[in-house]
Length: 534
Image 1 (tube, rainbow, N blue to C red):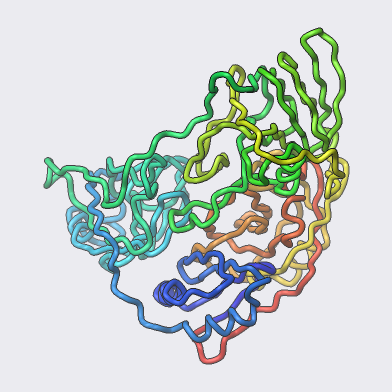
Image 2 (cartoon, one colour; image 1 turned 60 degrees about the vertical axis):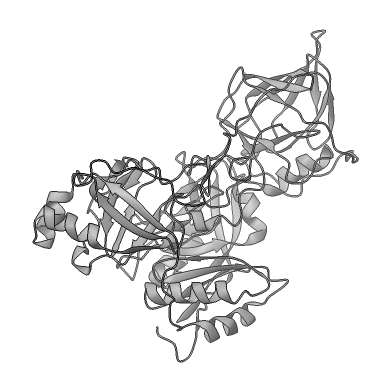
């Protein structure tokens, strides 16, 4: 067993196989440790996120060493029966690979007693273990660009159901009409770690009744809406999608949901602070400016982050310029126009009182990868402003970080690991020495970089493991991807390094066309736990 570095508030525990990872996960759940924020099990690893002010990494290593290697308890979660039409386009090929008939594949799949071992890849996607070992098949050599929602698949030792349409490389053997993920349910994910699962063949049970799992109840749909008799803003025009954001959805890993939230949290909180809001009040994240809105009633706004010019045209037709990082009084009928920023990528707009937008799964954050959260705003949308809470405005403040521009090079400190040893020594040197170009294919999910490709010393397939915001993942192409706020919860490519915590907000402001150089603030130093499997 090894403890691999991620950054100052995360470690990755590497074990021999899935059973050991789940055993340690269960032991930590049953023996809570003060300071642990969350842990995410994967095929052979367990990511532990913690507060270093409460518990040290050395103390965590002691706890892990004492709890690892125990026996797993039998699954006691609710039984979820999933009806399946065994019409998957890969079913004949799977049967051929396994040397049996398609009917035999279906029979073995339905006779297996599965358990939801872990979640990841997408919200509501559970990796199901416990299937008949004769159903072990490799992933497709070429993943599909689009797998339909409800597709039932096999990959390695796992079975699973795609909760929504997405790319995927699993072998598809059927489809289910059951909704695996629905934000109008509580919990939204039908399968939770520990859930017991049985598949039912709908061809043999035509009258199968689809029932929701116990504990799921309806929840009103959450949408941005306009109220009456209160101040509001009306969107006149937008450039790129304008998104509601807050501080995200921490603690939802059991449902396969990452935190998401503002890409630059420092600037986001500053905007709220300037208008007297709570730090986590919903604000708007505006990418590359180009937003115009009309004020209904009176209000106070602040704009932080990327330095987009602010022009305000009053009802009398006069236009004035307004400053960044300062509260700005608005009158009824004012039209506010934000131009393209001169530096930075994302601006944050807060209104005193906050936006009246209903949360989705406890947050107003729009997660572009998981497609969770209030819809992006467009022309004609009207959003009500909530009454202001008691509290003072901040007259002005200086930005806490310099915004990068397209012509410059951004230096990001990184912690080497957890998979630095998957790359050649030359590749590691190249990763740190060169300047990486930020390509136009970047988004809130991640920054795609271009440069001299990084060669691996380990060409094996990495079992899926948890990733964090700021992870620098390197796919087979050798071109790194720097994960941002909407990163996937788990990934199957090695992470060579992770951006240091104090530079995470800076990553959300790096524009297309800029260059990034990585500066290692630590060497790759895994810790081996003596007497444990490796």
